[in-house]
Length: 256
Image (cartoon, rainbow, N blue to C red; front, side, top):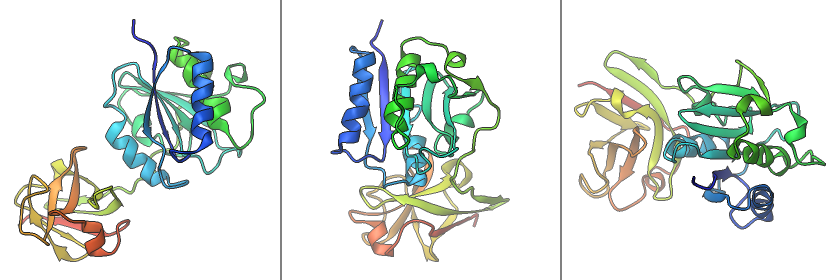
């Protein structure tokens, strides 16, 4: 039997002591746990960046993985904490839409974390990641059933990501974020856009390609990224720098 695998996604900062505290709580409860740092450099309080990261990583892990996802502007307020089981994974975090991709998965089961006996005491109003989410994740990774840590709910908050406008022969979406390389990640599923469709971003026409090395230099390229969504890139340089912006740029896809 493999040791429990717990994946961490936060906006704490990779060098912060908050990450160390989170891991300390996990190792105290599960000394043999395996911890994967998915990302800790989500821009502070950016649910959008966190959701895009989770969109790419949530279901790439082995079945049975427990994800702790903490991007939580409302920590200590009336916002709920939840745990979700979907597609053989478990996710623990705030009910603020950051787990939207998981609650929307077919057959997802969701509970609100209302069983205080599974929390770490005393609970700091400003650090639910350490005192609620990590302890509950450890319990679930150790074999406690989902319904034991909370009460079932059917109204978790949905994703905060904007949805594209879709009509026959036309899809209008937007850039969500730029990645490390300056590629622009959109909210448009690649399956909706044919290879022969015309794609513009902020009014600029793109080339169509399958890789980042296709097309002339200094020309924008529209391609389907590894997570299945349309991306806007630029060969050997940064599309984000070329356009001078990233989030919210309008992307129009039309069948020619």
